[in-house]
Length: 144
Image (cartoon, rainbow, N blue to C red; front, side, top):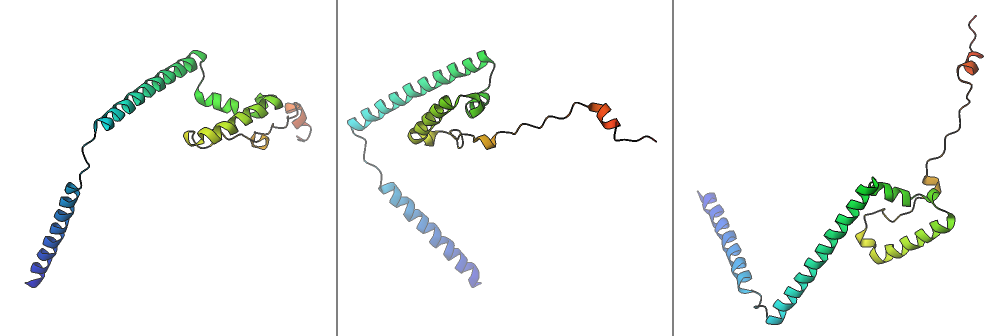
């Protein structure tokens, strides 16, 4: 049957094309790194390892401080996001600092971490209920 021959020819064609592409990529190897490249890589790697160690030390110190104070990072974030916790002047300074940090380091913070809550976002205080209790309710219920 001719359909079997056509399909095997197609598979042969595809496999040959794949082999040619692989051979071309092997031929396009990068040149050997020079001594300067190796030194630059070593210096970059050392700098990265120093930064990683500093990062790990900072994280450890911050985690210890949270544990010592018996608080969670989310609680600190919520506290600094609530304008009711600060005077208007202090709140303005905090917002200015956040704006500075947002422009300099915004891509490193999670979304919404530097956003300020607006006063209308704060939960409204519930109206106080009358303290009449049962005595106040019993007046409108007639038990005749």
